[in-house]
Image 1 (cartoon, rainbow, N blue to C red):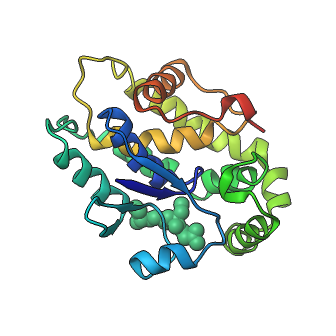
Image 2 (spheres, rainbow, N blue to C red):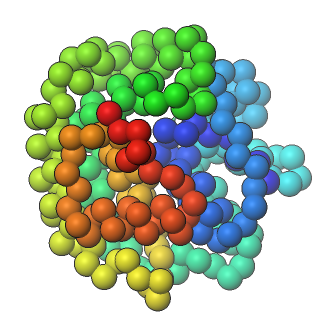
Length: 216
Ligand SMILES: N[C@@H](CCC(=O)N[C@@H](CS)C(=O)NCC(=O)O)C(=O)O
């Protein structure tokens, strides 16, 4: 199977995780952020992730891809129960402060989807419409970090015991890790101990790298 993604895209990380966690090989295709033609020709709109199945058909929607791959390669992996408390924190995290904090930083990492000036300006123009000027977002780093830090402290208490190879993984893992991975791009953030351990453990298990070593 082939998976079309942007490296920074948290929905794409969900799809990458299920392949990595199940130790199933697949082809990762990172497309340029201003490439509208490729996704539109596959699923009729500009969106990633897109899974190209072995029969040549295409599937968008991250959670559909995750469940498809989990079912396609038995035994099923995501058998754990979802926690309402963790999902509440995931929803709190996935908000405007999070986006203002991480989005302006993506274009400075040398990610493959931003390999051209055209891709960078396409992304910048589009995202600035909803988030405001990237320079203004970056200038608010300290305040935004405070907001996120409060949520991370609450999350830390819920992640006790989550780093265990005996635990059944659930869709919570698939929704939570991609957000934390994106936060690893923010140099100023201080990750509480359980959160950091969870990030490193899940990164290793899923084969999806973190951004700590190039954080800004
Ligand atoms: N509901 C979709 C959302 C996917 C999504 O929003 N992907 C973003 C990238 S993070 C996208 O393709 N946006 C269009 C664009 O970049 O122009 C899913 O879960 O897969």
